Image 1 (tube, rainbow over the protein chains, first blue to last red):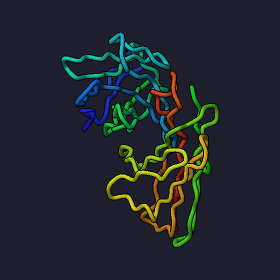
Image 2 (image 1 turned 45 degrees about the vertical axis):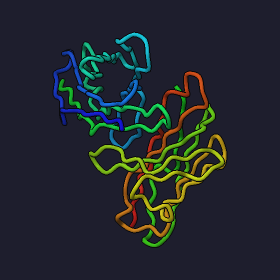
Image 3 (image 1 turned 30 degrees about the vertical axis):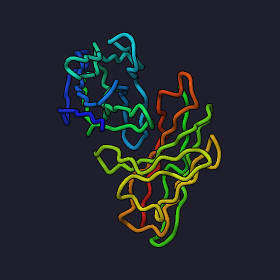
Length: 113
Length: 118
């Protein structure tokens, strides 16, 4: 069975500073990893994914994530955070056979002006 | 990116009645759709997986007679909460997987539907 862990419930950063949201995963085979963002009372928006290829994945809204196989991590990063990045972020791993997503508990990001 | 539409966004119903939530893939054919439930400030809980033209597969602990799922076409899945009770009040989110290509590996989510049972 696959799973992901998001060790931080909350991340607070000042606008313009780098933002990192941590995620570690556990899978039996090759990981298919995803990041989604959720704004209040809204569905999930897809940010980026790692399936294969380059370890550094670039996604929407200036976000990127680095796949690290040795550390089983897939941390989400943004070089310069915006107040509008304040939201709930979910890391997810997909089962390779039936496409089910397993989500982390979520990390609330607050970017202060 | 691909668009998944959910309707209604908000619904209030009386205890004991049934309510239907629709999930549509607007610009791609969704071979598989998923239904999730989310409690405030918590993660998503997968309820069931539905494939077009076949019966849904429910996760352990989810009552299939209470949460009826129909996936009649490649662009539409519906979740019907039957005999709703206040404890069914929640945020329900659907997601869809495309038939293949670049949309096949990514799961796209709807905007969610708030259900309040009074």
